[in-house]
Length: 266
Image (cartoon, rainbow, N blue to C red; front, side, top):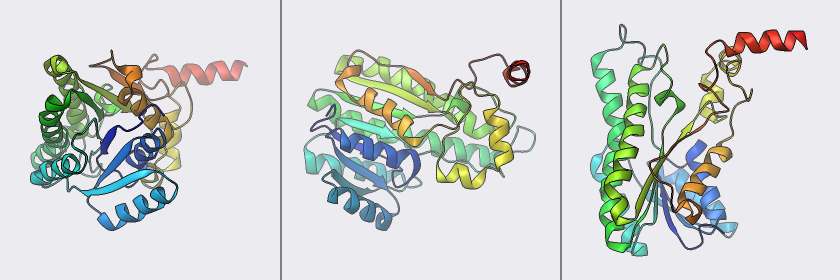
């Protein structure tokens, strides 16, 4: 029960990594709020988890509407008196439009970067305002390995995640005196429904060929890192950019070819 009685808010939390974070934090004893646009799905999920004895409550948030971040956090504070942990999980990109610099519409680039950055900035700013008054807290940003390792496409998504990594460090430095920690978790290819339905098996295998731990990560494995950063075990840890990516981007760029040769030799 590493998060016993902590008040945790997770954005974009009705599926995938966000939902895994909700479950993991609740199982560790936290009172968890699910930030979600689809309130019907959120209420159904919260009801099922509550039936298991977990404390999970939905709260409305539409990432495209800046005011809903403030309303969401204020609702949590009104109910609980504080917010201890904020998990910024929202992120968006359309691979059909977010391509390389030569083929990406500037409007797509600006909109994607704006959406992804403001989802972290506004919610963090609002949460910090309350955390400063209640003795501190922990902010955890779900970034991406794409924010560290440049790709041949998704220039807007990669730029926004790289900026979130740096924003994480800035918040950590600027808010440490208020006992507010800020860290980032960078998933690699993770076995969410979105990944499995939008990426062909051929592309998945191509990607994993260059991943030393040759499999996709599980949402629960990302959530485990979130629980660590949220807990008092990480009380002296801030400004860290933790890749949970099976080693993708760590090895030599020709890792896949070398691994195939080594495997062929036995």
